[in-house]
Length: 317
Image (cartoon, rainbow, N blue to C red; front, side, top):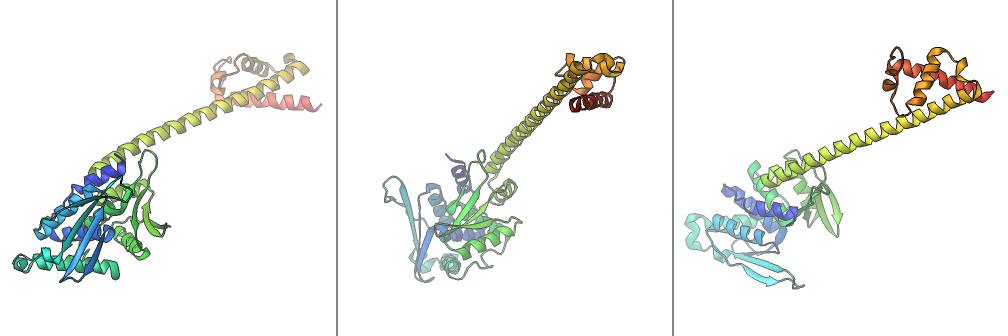
């Protein structure tokens, strides 16, 4: 199963503790995967999805919120390759005799909340509390979200039908100091995150702790690999630099030897030239250890520069 599928299965098992959070998550599912018709007193809510985990969770939310058990209708998608799960909830499922328990009032409220989402936008009454906003975002991702495998790339998104809905979802997510962007794709509007830190935060907001831990493990491994690659590239660059510098120094020393001879050099420069030619792959610090007495890196560099200046003068003659 994909990383995105794992997150959704985990979220499908998370049930809100409070009634207002139940309504918020139900509203998100209906908003992103459902249709409503009629009125709050005589209306119907239909949710259709190819995600069986989402369908089962919606049934559980209905049972907990309204004390109603509904049937799950299963049929094939037009392609015939996947199942399509349909749940229908109507005001008739919350009859008047249940008014004492508040079932009818609850149905009316959730119907009105979703109707407002579709027609007028998000209402503060639905998302009064932080826990409700978390539940709404969880329901939105479970219904219309996806996430790439973090081992390949960091990308989290929720697809919205309208730009207004996308902007309002961004505002809800923004209350947790997470700031997604919006892009239009195939006449729909995608709310997305690409920063790994922001994705960690949104998984935490949705209470997807298992996915969060897996993502953190992937990030640690990727950081270690990137660090190792940077160190390897740095070492390779340093070796290449040493080789290029040593080659140039040895060429200068050959010019001196073939043009004026080493005998005309001072004893210290002659020794430096001989040591460099005998140890072509050594660093400046290592070359200094072969001199008598030993000389530090700066001293070796100074002597090799003097040899280079002599060679350049000989080339110009």
